[in-house]
Length: 75
Image (tube, rainbow, N blue to C red):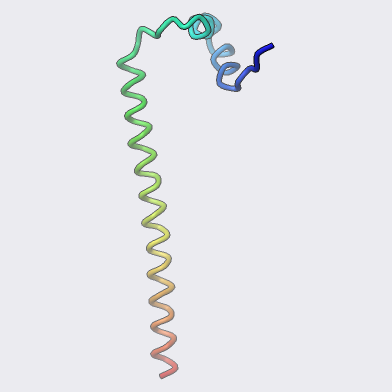
């Protein structure tokens, strides 16, 4: 017995015919839309990671500024 994946269950619950086509290896007719969605998700993921990188960088600069300020007060 083969294992079922969660994405397979989701596909089946959304549209049983689409699940069957996928199981039979029949390619989807909306390849342009699927390709566009893939490009969008890659772009969105890149923006997400860049935003997190800049957030961490900003926190590091604030900590550095506080350290410098603390050292000037002690001097």
